Length: 167
Ligand SMILES: [Fe+2]
Ligand SMILES: [Fe+2]
Image 1: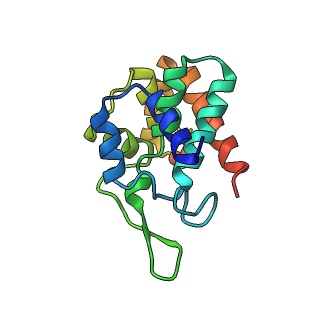
Image 2: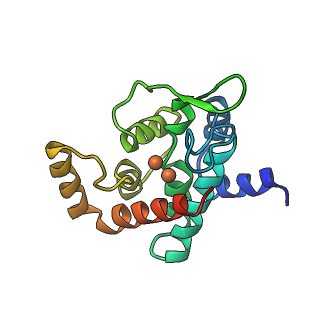
């Protein structure tokens, strides 16, 4: 199995209509890096990072396989819009027209027709945990934790763990 076949397999397990895969291509999902200069700052880095997060969620055995794939593969969709390749290599940050990081990813998912269960959407929205939240956002975060504690805390942990192991 080549890399693209493996990636396709992960995406197929998110159980979305074919138009979603076409839209992912169009927004640059397969070419985006996972970061500007930290982890997997190379084209294709976003997909690799997303597969790592999916694998960690699967290993926890707490969510359905479909949920693990949806959360893992789509939690960082904002990275399709916020890193622009620059001549000579590397990427520069471009501000997308959405608030936040997790919220932006959930909005982009909705824009391209990805269907998510409420806990999957919450896991994506709050995958940065309590990092850099102001008082109002902290209150929103606590309210979300009351409804979807496992999905939010464990997705944050999976994301953090994946990025620590990525060069
Ligand atoms: Fe992220
Ligand atoms: Fe991530």
